[in-house]
Image (cartoon, rainbow, N blue to C red; front, top):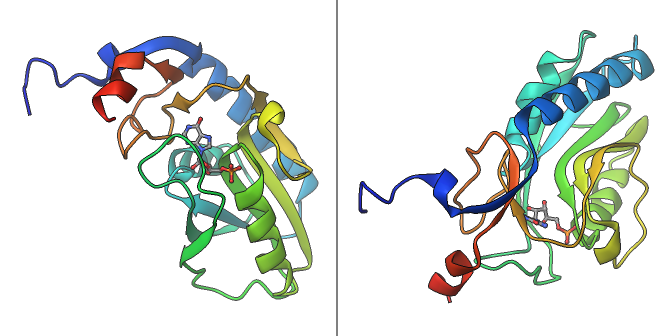
Length: 188
Ligand code: IMP
C-alpha cells in the first residue's frame, strides 16, 4: 500500500453528519434508554461488525445496569447493494429468554436484515424487543420496520464511517460521509 495515499479522509466526498453531532445524539439516546429501561437490566445486542462503535459509545452514555452480546449477519458482501439474502454468521453467546432485548444497528436500509433478526430473536421469547439504529434510510425500505430509537434519517446515499464500511474500509472515521465516485470505480 502506498504510504502517501493511505489516508481515509481524502476518499470522502462529503461529510453528512460530523462527530460532534453524532456524540450529542448518542448522549440523548443513552439518556432516553436509561430512563426507559430503569430496573430492567436490558441486554444490548450489537449487530457485527458495523455497530461496534455505536455500541461502545452508547454504553458509556447509559447509566443503568445492562449487559451486552453480539450477533453477526451478512447480506452485502463486497458491494453497495444488499443481496437481499440475510445469513446468520455468528450467534449470541447467551440466552435471551425473559430478557429485555435492545438490538443495536448502525443503519436500517431495506430493512431486510432487521426483519430477519426480529423474526429470529422473537422465537427465543425475550421479555421485550426494541430496536435502536443510528441511521435510517426510509426511502429504501422494502419491509416495514418500527425503529424505537433512531439517531438520524438520511437520504438514499451510500455512507461510510462511524462503524459503517465499504469493502471493510472507512469504519474508523469518526463522522458519517459519502465516498468519492472514483473509489467505487476503482473497485469495479
Ligand atoms: P438492510 O438489510 O438493507 O436494512 O441493510 C442493513 C445493513 O446493510 C447494515 O447493517 C449495513 O451493514 C449495510 N448498509 C446499508 N446501507 C449502508 C450504507 O449506506 N453504508 C454502509 N453499509 C450499509
